[in-house]
Image (cartoon, rainbow, N blue to C red; front, side, top):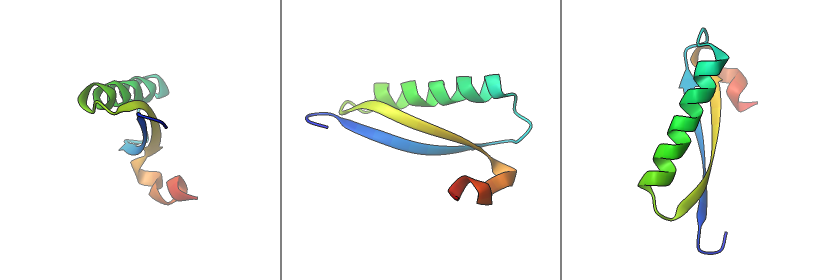
Length: 58
């Protein structure tokens, strides 16, 4: 996107993780990538339960 890049990342969490915590974790990952990689200004984080691995790639 012009002089900036976007990133898309898939993270796996335990299936019993409370959705509020999974959402918070996704934002932490997003912020860490944006802070750590100068060219990236947008990150899409997909959260998937680790024990439903196959369902994440449908």
